[in-house]
Length: 90
Image (tube, rainbow, N blue to C red):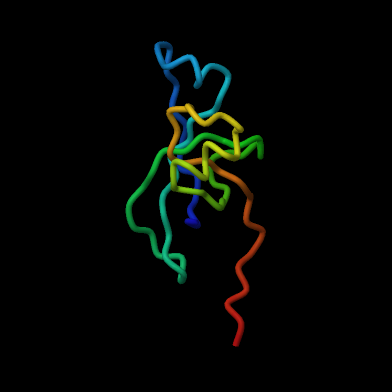
């Protein structure tokens, strides 16, 4: 899983039917300290995320398809949680 921050969304008028009605989000990946490094595109898995929110992303196709319960979905990354805070411990 990956922690990241939603930086924007993607609007597409022509796409695979699977994506109809789904929100495509640009997520900037972060390391454990919060430092940014790269990005990915993920669908909102029903969390209702918005730009600026910190999220948890599954970035593995089979696991993402299990979340949407569609073994043939053209999907790799899905947002599965909104992160309130990260406790690094002591």
